Amino acid sequence: MFLGEYFHSLDEKGRVVMPSGFRRDLEDGCVVTKGQDGQLVIFSAADFSQKAAEVMERPQDRMGRRISRTVFGGADLQALDKSGRVLVKPELREFADLETATEVAVVGVFDHVELWDKDRYLADRTAGDEVYQEED
Image (cartoon, rainbow, N blue to C red; front, top):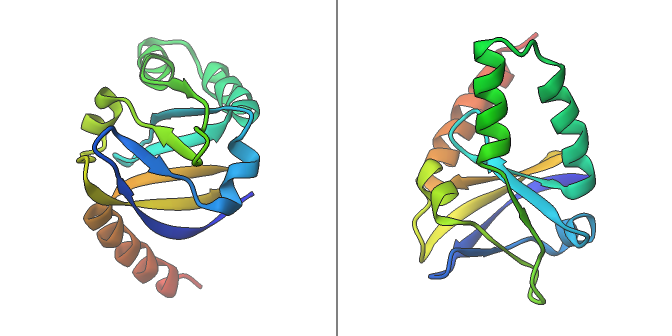
């Protein structure tokens, strides 16, 4: 399970350190792919199989095929390096507006991790906090 928010640097090679509490669940491999809010999502390799099944359960009409191509075509199977870092390939960094040598948000969202441009994440978090406080 992934919980909490952290801010880490995306190094000049496009690697980001995963928080120590996340590494155990990612050490057997992980999949980095595009998220629906302009962020990147990271699943353990095992959990990605479940996400893949959900995507494939959608009707495979034109929209379903586009979603499948986005999720699977953009996906990248990775292994954490010895320092607990995951490499984010350039195409995925571009999608999420992640710049090397800058700080990114690493957010645990129960069954996956999200990588955000820090400023975009903080704005989204503020909007989410407002909605949450208005909920009954």
